[in-house]
Image (cartoon, rainbow, N blue to C red; front, side, top):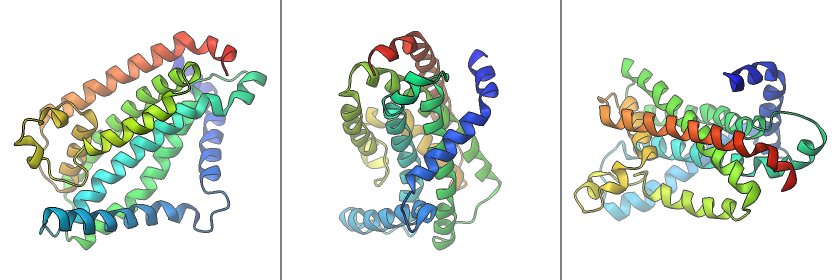
Length: 257
């Protein structure tokens, strides 16, 4: 409740930090926000050509399968990486003006979420291209995105704290994100892994559960309740641990940045 009250008090600053993040991301870019639509399309085309040929995929909705997973993963990676660097990147401001320090990682997570929501336009375009008609079950995507936002916030707060004391965390997390991408069934069907002895890679990966729930909503398929519950529980644990860890160490930041 204390965090929520402070966010309410500093809501104008939070909105300005989010706007600043969006402006800086596309500064000196001729395409600007349109790049958020072009980049996932180009990436999807490459993945469809490479892995579609490699795996011999004949499914006409394969591009939609890839882009639905790719968008979720891209937001997860960009938001957590941005939050990881947020305290060090704003060290000058932190030393001069008092602002609740968690505003910086949260603003990075929110500005990436805004960009992610804009990029969902590409998902609609791909649904039309693949002739997948949305039904009322598309609203199931909303809880999946809320769980994703909560999990990214928790992980982002943990990374932001660790990166103040251990500068290698930023580079280690880049490697971890690459591993998570391959463990999330973005460009391959999970059945290939489920039939092997490595099914645990997917079953214990909360990001895969979120991606699967999001895909089920897009394809109008029923949810797997254990995926939803596991992802929600993991997100809540990440948020609780992240906020507690950040709050415990935030007063020490000034000594290390």
